[in-house]
Image (cartoon, rainbow, N blue to C red):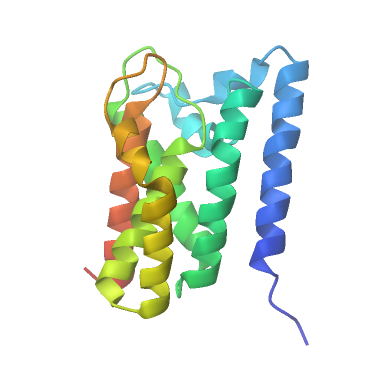
Length: 181
């Protein structure tokens, strides 16, 4: 009898992979950053797949790792939809939005678009379902990560507020699609 893989183990493997990628990136003089999203360029399309895996340094990775792990865990615990399907849809839609709307000539990297998308998905999915367990998850997201709303504003040079906004929009879209409109 085939057992379903444990999503929390899968999250742990994913997080370890992010750190392994950062080690390779650090050892190669940040060579992998060229695989980020370069808005409205053909070569920049590959960044839709790779950008959330890439970070400009250890501080950037550390700033994204904890919220990403927590939000993925909350999604795995609370979502009735396929955990990785939901994550994948948010990943691709936020990346595509960043590719379409990002600043020309920039290279956009990092998992923050995914973080914003997961947070938005969890809150909107709870609102739509009126389920007590999902409401508790949404409360936790708002309580611990409500301050990320400031990242939607272009206040910090070098930070992709476009990726944040596109992540939020992607999370809302995926929640609406999961609900059926």
